[in-house]
Length: 280
Image (cartoon, rainbow, N blue to C red; front, side, top):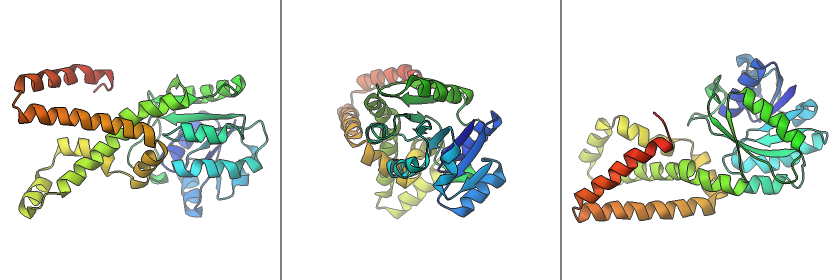
């Protein structure tokens, strides 16, 4: 197949590597000529351009731009596409994207590969990024079954584990395990910066090790991505943040009241439950 990728960063570039390995001809579009050249030189895409018309011959197009650009880019792109082209995106928020695009493009399927890291740019693209990672698809009632089947085959070829759900349910779920951790992690860094004793602040910086590195990683990542998560998944994220604040208050209470047995019970429950979310 001819597969287009609009947005040649970490996700778009990594998709290019893996789709080419499956024998597809990959067309890439980026805002910068330098990125286009680098993507071709790295072997992420077969052809690249800053012109959307390059994607006119694609059977399937993946939109891999930042969340805020997905809808306006699709609105521009569809002027170049035949009605049979399948369009999908990789944004971490689905409801506003699906609600905006599905009515204007029948063959649109919302998507979200749960893969990646805090790196950005085509240089950070890597092979096999999606292997054994969840890949969520959010078709709606009007989405043609044939389009879903084609996209499923492509996603399955990446080695991903496919999940289907409604856009709204996707956004509520990722608010807990993706968007909330970014805000909690960011607030951890901000809290550390509030230390007014410079000697203590410098000592903390020198002593920071794996615990701080792990818990601060996502909060110290791409600021644009964090802001867009909050902007486009605002209600679900606020719900999660309020619930998190309530749980944090409960921990504060247990420590203030020296209720060590109850604190131990909660920590034991956390230890037993964590493997349901992640496996080390």
